[in-house]
Length: 353
Image 1 (tube, one colour):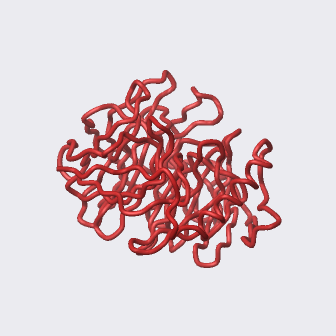
Image 2: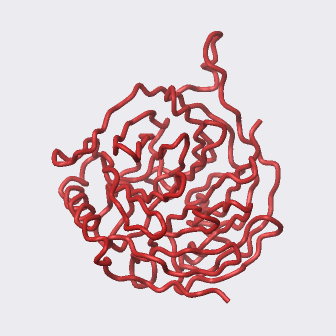
């Protein structure tokens, strides 16, 4: 039987330093989130730089240029137990892939923990409270989930979910938040941006089981619904919304120094997308701009070294609020919402070619 996730509605005393840093970042954002963003707070010690960034079309393939990255193509389709948008998706070391929480077709939070691989997708457990917009990352054979939106508002809970679907609260974030992205580097999970009850966030938080939450970087602008992955020991963050408008920047975060760089720009502002790192390339899948019905089918490949951005395939239909993860050399894409507002139950498997 799954263990319920107890909500934490206030910061724990061991996180006081991180809470203070997070509050400072939130106040800075509140003062300036009405604009398009772009620079770090003068009080921040985080350095933000811009590297040359290029958008390359498929036709831009003159002799002498580097070979384009692999494209992703659909090789299999399965069906989830129920339609879902904004699930948290995590691939564990043993090959288990879990989809946790999300919103159903009526925009209500769900409690389900679904094992989407191996085998046919099936419900294997439940959260103590239904939640959506949850950041998730695999650590030590478990999926760790961070915050999320509930019927009573965001939660600060950090919970560990086993491959069998059992969930247990293990710690707390410095503040209640939802709309985060998360990824793991080594034995540490990193939580990117998010939203409190009133303010979009600029924080990058680090969590290692058994240790306090740390603030490791400050983003150049607030971010919600960003597409996050890790590659080469760095966090890669594509698009997202600053609370007002969707963004184009692809950011690289050095979690050891706190340095944040703009390494590329997407062809269009894009939030509510998904991202995976595969073969040294960041793939950004789906998403939408500011319009609720602006979903795209495009899959973009970003070269983190050169900043080049190329088309790398298409989804079967335009989807936002989807989730994606790499597993067994493939990319799994779960759920999402289309331009008509329909929530989907497909689980697509994509392969590089």
